[in-house]
Image (cartoon, rainbow, N blue to C red; front, side, top):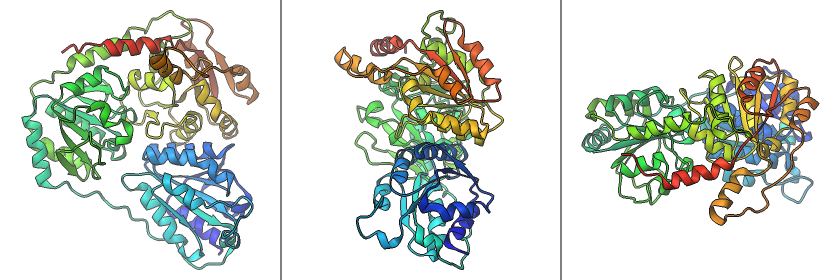
Length: 543
């Protein structure tokens, strides 16, 4: 057995289903070994697309998604997707071929020090210099990627090492269990909650990673504490739940910000600082913060923890709920009522181009509650985060740690592979769409039926929004687009264009019923962006 075959056996031992990537000269032996494996190699059209697919696979399953490239430019093309997974805390293992070890000490064709390149954007990097270390390297890469806080790891595999003979075997897979929360800290947290006048919960993506959303909903209902979630934790408390205040993170004086300003105790549960900077929701630095998570809090002057409860989040919530005194009624109910009214006010809007609120209303109307939306980055992300109602976690995937454009199309492909019986929609702006639209060919080749909903404004809408806020004029944000219907048809996919008011809902239903990929070109009225900004800036708290 050569080292490449041992490497594949180690991947099989980790339960790897798919490897997303592009073959190259320096991973020839690995590609050949995969032919005799049950692991399915998914050939993509760009390494960035491969990394995003692994990213979303990891986020949806909790198991490390795997992506593969060759050396040099192939590896550097992985970096954006790997960094996205790492900052979004999605488990991912990236693998890159490398030149032979006899070339690594000098300037040589396509050779870069990949360990050094990937070290700042991963939790762990390693170069395989002898075949005997492969079982340890692979086991460590997966263990670290899948341990809290989950993230990305990287393995560099030189081509000459891949050919060497080896007699070894994969190591047993053992994942550590999170510890029980210390009783003293549980009691301190319960006492602080009981004595609070107006407590509030900020729920983060760690609640999803730990599978603690049902425990959180029960905790909030039992103690009658309102819950705002980060963009990446949409659905951790069902929107229909009376305690839900939906998403925080618009960086404006909106309903949720008003809620934070009235809270005296803020329970941050599974919250990652990268999701929503504390200076935006805790500028006064005078509130009591309870940190409930697997790991210690990040150091930040606006995140000074009063009580930290570290351990299994599920058990922490149950233990605290047993001791804390329920509150009689939270004072933020008007915030929830105002948000619901805002969601409804444009459901019958006859305008064209279509208002963001109407697009979201129609999308939510046609999708089942457990269907999956993968949201790209741009102005549409802000609207989706605010107004797309979620009843379950991981049904609206938003990148908000690294917040990289281009994730929606490859991410939707991975989501459909994970959940083939559920509808999957990529919600993207025209700019983000074209960054990885080549992966449409991947979807068509694999017969993966997703819907790509393009919010078309022929510009970088979010940047225009920010420019108008700050300078009252725009700079270099306009561009032109191809004919998206013809573009879809050139791949053999279905193409639709919204040409008037009232059409989107019917087009969505038709596209979702098709057995193949569909693209919907929907002109969007982003003049609503500035109206929203003005509304939030002038908002007076209704309580």
